[in-house]
Image 1 (cartoon, protein in one colour):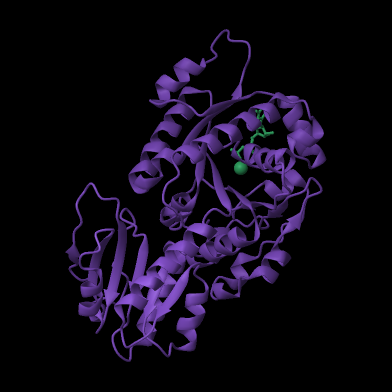
Image 2 (tube, rainbow, N blue to C red):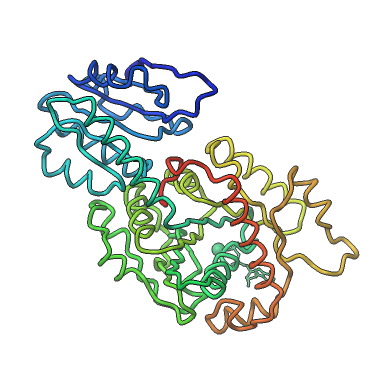
Length: 402
Ligand SMILES: Nc1ncnc2c1ncn2[C@@H]1O[C@H](COP(=O)(O)OP(=O)(O)O)[C@@H](O)[C@H]1O
Ligand SMILES: [Mg+2]
């Protein structure tokens, strides 16, 4: 990683952060941006960057790439890294005559454009505006929400399924919704919903570019209640067959095909787990109401916030299986929040009959027992997350997959 040279902008100015890895056009780019106070440029020397000088906690709003002369392969490597790290960040490539592999890598990203040579200041600034505009118009698309349990059995799968159903049934417009089970060892979405487990991500893990609309169609199992389920068959070694690139590509393509992507995450951390969390518009951490579970939820939340700092306002703690009658050794909402060290976004009533009936019939709870309190509470949770997202939506560039 090279030492960056920076053109700082005043702190009070909201600026567009550009990460630039530049070859021969470095001086021209710096000259073009000089005096443009809306940009802050972090510039690196291309010949010193075999990998992208990427800092997860300092994601840029725009990436500018120019490989050293005659080193197109290096550009391909950078683009592939971007596809994994943050495929929706707008990318401008300076130069012409790209190799086939560079073009393929470019096409996996959401907003890209080329700046032709010889370098022209005006064209360059126009291209920045165009690529940033196209990014902001597409980033209002898919919403991606992830669910994770603080302890086994807390209810992440149940709540992810019910959220998919409620999003489908309560939306004024027809929305395409995907429920993706990323627990490749013993995910339960397919079993809970009685659909085939057709997600064979391991087959294409070495060539993630093969994951396209047609393949997602083959992976997806439509559920009668109106949303698609992408879930792999149980496999004790399931995580060994997949990698960050294939997960990134899967989610990226799904986010172009669906309006809403709900992810059931395993709480066993993989090398891509934090990327998925970082790319999610909401992470729902589900805890049950026992002291060990609450402490596990508190620790997990702190761990995630330390790893993905920009995600803090999108982390939602949810208390599941809340009992109405408070007696004996039950923990109240107030006590639970004390143990968590923060407020919970919502609580979900306990309804063992409704939950058991749903899984026994292969249905979301709201379909088997439409009046279940769980469905009502999940609707309230959806409202809370949506209003939080409207208030404090983070820059789209901080998202990986939506
Ligand atoms: N609010 C609830 N009330 C009653 N039972 C629930 C509730 N939420 C989940 N369950 C049940 O708890 C068990 C574990 O839920 P599950 O969603 O599989 O947990 P996880 O995915 O966190 O391991 C399942 O039998 C499910 O039906
Ligand atoms: Mg589960």
